[in-house]
Amino acid sequence: MSQDKPIVFVVDDDISVRESLEFLIRDVGWQSETFESAQAFLLYPRVFVPSCLVLDVNLPGLNGLDLQRRVAADRIGMPIIFITGYADVPMAIQAMKAGAVEFLTKPFGDRTLLSAIQESLELSRTALEREAEIRKLRERHDSLSRREREVMALVVRGLLNKQVGFELGISEITVKAHRGSLMRKMNAGSLAGLVAISVKLGFSALKPSTNERSGAFTHPADTARCIEMRASEGGHPSERYDPLWDSTNSRLI
Image (tube, rainbow, N blue to C red; front, side, top):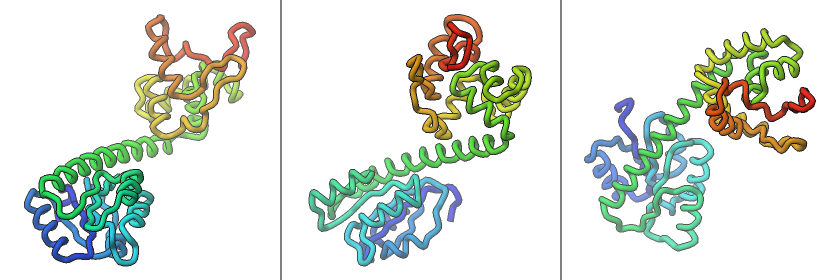
């Protein structure tokens, strides 16, 4: 089996359907793996090439909708195309709401199915690329020292070096040293880039609140927007956005 060729999985309890779909799929150059039940499919290890699942709704044991829920939880990035000879509107709505790419009623045309498979494989490819990117970012973040992580968490909220030093009880010079080191380790060319990395890693969810006194956002995504808007005003953008700094009284809010 090729290590990078897309794989189309087929789960259908009708052997004639499995065989015809396998021939169609291989004929256009994709790999195909077929299964007669959801349980048999779940025994197959997760793959890390673009893939999708052509799935019959009505299966013995674990049905197609139940398998869809399992796939969504355990095999992120595997789009599903439902096929069935006994469809009803509520079933189709349930499947589509749960993220199915297509819901086809037998008999269906080859071109219709192949088009849905092509779309699904592209979605899978994008999801795998995003997952690989996040994995690399997490590895870089894991390489940071405890202090560097603390500095990063405050920097992406928009605090100045002197504010970060005040929060952590260290000198501004020490903050700059940690900041330079973490920027290199995270491969971030700018503060805006570091903020974008923070958002991708999901750290934005940790600080979604708004400062009650000043009304300034402390969400990293808002920090990035402010950096972009204020960079044109002159000066270094990394030293211009300070949502938690009370400039009137020169202190942290």
